[in-house]
Image 1 (cartoon, rainbow, N blue to C red):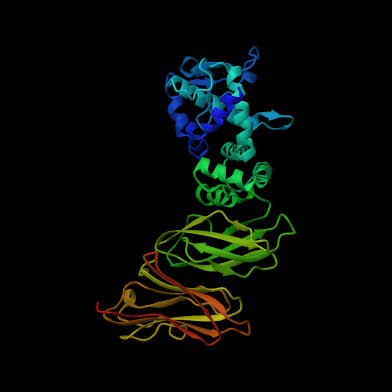
Image 2: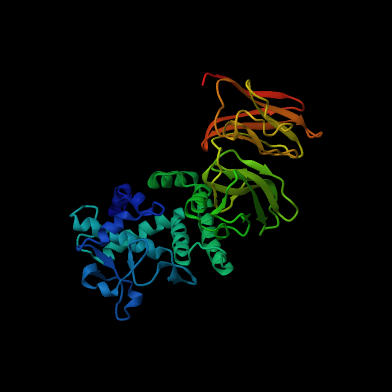
Length: 432
């Protein structure tokens, strides 16, 4: 039996566990469950007279089944199973391995665990496989996902549900943090992506809208505007707040991100609130808030979407910087007209659609400053310039200058500047 277990270990990748445990993807089981030949597992807890494992054809007893959302079949949801008062996370994996073995048996594959569906023989292998999976922490990750799937992701969040979700996420982190580096590398190879909790957490929040409260009692949320808000302007004030469930955590910096662009830092008030002006592209805009703790951990809010119907909004020239209580100015000039800057915010270059406007002017730190124009008025020399107007005694700062065309970033440069310094980001001759 030891030899067989060793062979099974060597065949781990051939069992396509990377397909089985890829987050949000269980196509391998969907195909098998609608195959009339596939066998599935019936939970013995739901059939009082049944002892041990028992298998039946799926199509023979359709009235018995509740289809588990991941396309495995159970009569009891996995997160409802308990063992010694703890969630029995091995249930899902136990039945998963049964299903994989049966699929291979139907294909006359040597990878089937038992040539005759012998439950006791299969369990010799399954016990080994369960231990391998549980030691990687994936069991708790799946447990977390299935709980969220059952309870939903709507807001406002029920505190009891959030606390239970955090328990499952923290258990996953505990197991993960105990893994040796070589075990993490083996698991990375098995699932096909870097198994980093921060990456997985960000994916849940940004791409699947898991509430941030499901991960930690310390989090950041956007208070206003509400998601799907609409505005006719190309800018909107964004307000957020930090909730410190753990008072030992201190905030190093807070920021906003608009459409995945450069981060806009913001000052945090004593009550944890912070805000900025978000410059919007015409159409849908995704905005997130976040903060970084003193121990370099990053916390992200759930994203919101803001829709702008602004006109003459094709080109945006923008700066942000990383020093509070400082004044950095942006200007945009054309050889055929007056300069657009804080002293002349809306020069006339020949009509509204071809005239620039300084629509965001920041004088107390971090930015942004933004100049917008619908279209270039004609041939000539165009210059974008940055002036560190005053450091207010606070020293130099890193300034990032960006240019956007219809919401797509086409220029992004950063320079360290000192008080009074000027920086010509670009000068171009355009023939029209």
